[in-house]
Amino acid sequence: MVVALLVVALLVLALLVAVLVLLRRVGSRGGLGVPATAPSALAAADRDAVIAAVRAEAERDLAAVRTRAIAQVERDVEAARARADARLSTELAERRESVAAEQAERRAALSSELSAERRLAREQAAAEARAAGLAARESAAAELVAERAEARVAAEVRDRAAGARHQELAVREGAIAARDAALAEREAAVTSSAVDLAARVARAREVEAAAAVAVAAAEAERARELERVAGLSQADARTELLQGVARDARRDGALLVRQLEAEARETGTARAREIVGQAIQRVASEQTSETVVSVLHLPSEEMKGRIIGREGRNIRAFEAATGVNVVIDDTPETVLLSSFDPVRREVARRTLSTLVADGRIHPQRIEDTYARALVEVEAGMQRAGEDALLAAGIAEVHPELLTLLGRLRYRTSYGQNVLAHLVETAHIAAGIAGELGIDPATVKRGAFLHDIGKAVTHEVEGSHAIVGAELARRYGEAEEVAHAIEAHHQEVAPQTLEAWLTIASDSCSGGRPGARRESLEAYVDRLARIEAIGREQPGVERVFAMSAGRELRVMVLPEEVDDLGAQVVAHDIAKRIEAELTYPGQIRVTVIRESRASETAH
Image (cartoon, rainbow, N blue to C red; front, side, top):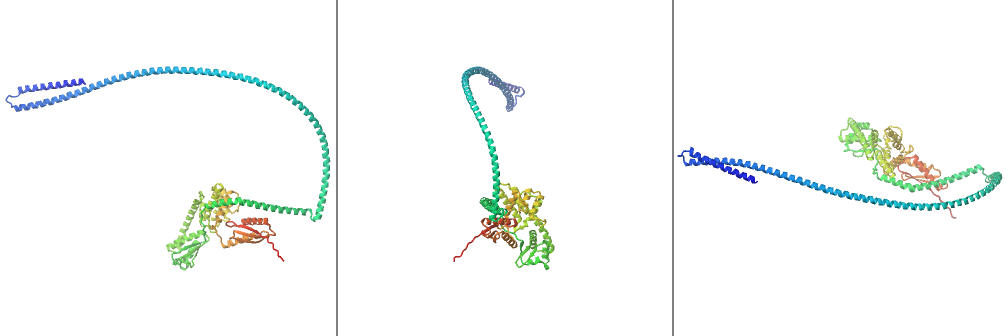
């Protein structure tokens, strides 16, 4: 820094010297080149200009000097800084080396101390190990001495025991010899006794043979005497005895049946009611019944005239196209469509509703509208089948079976819609299967398809159960499902649990209140047949069918039928009704036996 200041001072002095030199040059020019007669004002102006020029040049020189001085100073500073850094780095390196040397010396000292301690620890451990080994050897030697002493004592004990055993064996050998002698004597005695016994047996057999002959003669004499006294031969007596035994056996069997049925009622009826009740409670179904007549309401009375047409041509064309009878009576603004085919009736209803709404009714229009209504009904049946599958929770079925299911949407049985009956039966079967711990998939499928044969019974001969089973097998259903279908009316003997559950669920769905109804003729025929079955039993006096055919009361003759016989009569009637009749719900059979005794006092 001092050197830089000296350099700046020298530069300033040089600058002053240069200024003085310039001023001298200017003065010399004024004395030589300017005339003496020039005015003083011009000389003063030139002098100022020269001074300004000199000053400017001096400033430029000063700036250049300053710049060179600053650059030189910066270079000196950088050099000094570099030298200082070099010295600092050298000192740091020397200090690091000294520190490293000190650390190395300390580490060497520590390692030597550690190695000494380790050697001392190893020597101590070796000494302890040697001491432990010496102690173990001493203890082993002591144990060996003790074991040898014990072995000597045990050997002495064994020797004494062996001597005692030898003496005992000698005593036993003497006893055995004595027993052998006694046995030899007994054997001789037994041999002589056997000879005597054989002789006695021979004499006893002779006496037994003589006694058997005497007994046979006595039995024959007794039989002859009994026949003489009783007036019966031996065959007649045997027959009478067998009849008595048969009566007793029948009586005992009736008692056993009565007892078993009572026990079954106590345990089985309650459980069955609980299972069936829980299954039915899960199903909420409609209790309305469908009829064979559809009612169509008209906007006005004059629409009846349009339906009839000129000279009845419209109504004739409608009935010919649809196959449905149109009933027009005095009921205001109402037309009845009557047909036993529910599909035709539905197509006719839609056709007539469209014609009435349009107002144009003539034969050609009737045929066109009927064709469109038929397509709509078929599409509706397809949708109905799909909705039924969804409602029952059944997986996909064959498309042909789906079409047949759709037909059942317009099919009724005793007034109950068959498709709704199938859905309800499937839910009941699944509920019963769930209560019994059975996989409900197969049971539900069999119950859902059990009436599929009703869709084609007018096209194929045979009962709907057999036809439905054939359809199920044809379209790939499992054998368990097909068997449940063909056995649900017991036309085929049920062989599987699925078949029995299908029968039970079908009965529950058809027998619930409001589910089905029947015509008056069928009702009267069923009651008459029930009473006829009751009257055919032996000992029956009177029969009454009561409670709309759900109860049968049978009066029996007390002198011909006893209490157990009344139980047998009720059982036989119930079995015949189950085998010969088809009916909704259940029928209770009650047998009444009444004994009356009267006497007149005189």
